[in-house]
Length: 203
Image (cartoon, rainbow, N blue to C red; front, side, top):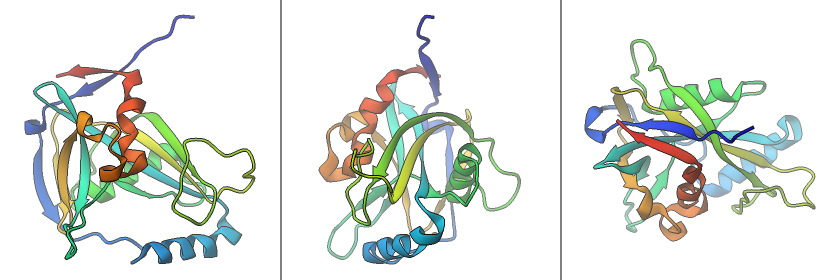
């Protein structure tokens, strides 16, 4: 059987319009609080399952990743993240990804956008209640604390993004992310390699 290349359509950034909606805040105010909640829930819920959504556009035939930017803070820190969220117990991954991107960037009123989840790009494991994550499950880990899956979402040709007021939605070129873990973290900076298996069609 011959290998088939997966095609993803990328539309120009100028095809999209941008509005705002009420601010969206994390469940946990600090990193320490996040890990404590994860620890508290692990006994009853087991491994936390998290979804992050990869949204791509192009500018002059260069692929760009849509990122939520928080900051700069008073100290000058800028934080970038993908639209993300936790799956509910028993929730389907594809339906969960659609729910998460709609809740994050969809219109607050009216029918939901027809988000199409195209493929799983990568998965990351968190062995302990700590920051380090790995794109594989270490052999000695039998009870991982979190499984994070990144799904590429095929954008419609045109749509309105409703951005929470406490964030900016920015388009970062893939060449800026490449091996730039100091600026974007290990997960986002790995996306250029992960996305290399797709054939981008510039519409």
